[in-house]
Length: 277
Image (cartoon, rainbow, N blue to C red; front, side, top):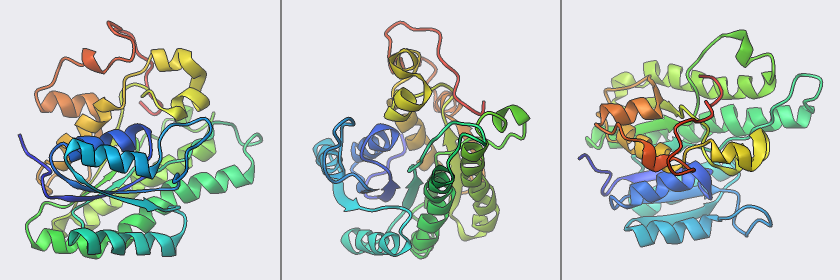
């Protein structure tokens, strides 16, 4: 099986949930992982900080760099990218995982929420990748198979994905449009740009608090399915670019067809489909 051993990954929003799972999975290969997220002190309701995840990365066999970063802050992003490259000698992978969610119609969406989603989702994805590009280009020239991975859905102009939560959809599709653009722009530079999205809801704080509480969690899969799918994508040749991958399809291609181990509820056969699919 292909490995991320010795690769350096810059991952946004990795203090919990899917980002944390992706980081720890990469660490089991011996990867270097920079966790760039806002949470440096324990949250009263949510588990995990950049420091707890860094400890888990090192326990799993990787090297970690905990960076307190607000991905909306262009200067701090540039500084964090530089710190990562200085510490590990370069950057081979960028995972744009940071995301904000607020599901409401137009009248019920405060502009500050609209701005937050555009800034954390689309703008930060663009900003982080832009700052990392010189290092990804160097990685490509060194034959190190560089990747940009964005946690965003396939583009789908069906009105049902816009009507109920227009602002959120715009922000997530903005991330996906970055993938579409970079897949074309960067293909001749040897840098892959792909998106990954789950078939079902994933048991994260966002699902619990934004989509339906514990009942929704029971109908979800664990973040490990996204971590394993991300690993499969990041170890593909960087000539595979501009794709909108779905977790179970990626795993099936890798030979993993029994997904029962990812169910939050043991033995579950019915799951809640994620948005945009």
